[in-house]
Length: 255
Image (cartoon, rainbow, N blue to C red):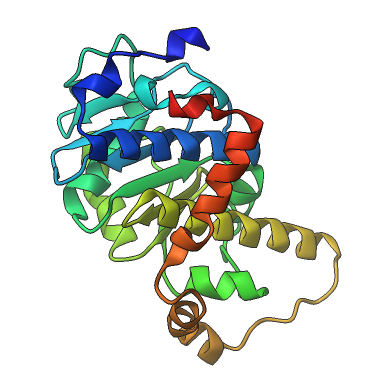
């Protein structure tokens, strides 16, 4: 763990960037805590405050449970590290995240996972089904992107952006799940909903019986319902509690 802590970083960044780093490191720890990390092979990125050209991403090779605020790596949209971090970055992570950050200036955080439930649903021809209360919030803002191999090619970027559109959720066929948010808390809450929907669907299908689907008119009003329930605060409602939980378990993400 000591190799993931760089004490000098906090003194060299603004208070706003440091807080972003703490939140992003917390998000990585939460992904690990929920069992969604796929070892070291997925990624979460966060755009630097007031900067559409640079974002933070994980040090490639670090387990998500090891990531700290000071270990996060700053990269630009060209895939170049712009700090003196000794850590490498995942090139596939860069391709996906740089494409979205470059196109969606309303997005502060991009979260991508390879969960078993998510991949299982992404491989189903009909994708996510409206069979749970959670699913209606995802379906009302969901895009699909067909599998093109490991995301390493720049020519895939326009299609990723097109298929995400203005949505919050993107199902990557045969690959996994992706969410975006104005901030880290919103992207995490969106992923919690997305993965929960997929887990519910797989369990419901395993029962073998005919499934009852939510009426399309209810799905159409889901965004209005979500705004009423959360009062447009989204992930901010649950984020402080999640940070308290992490502090009880292991507060080293703040280092």
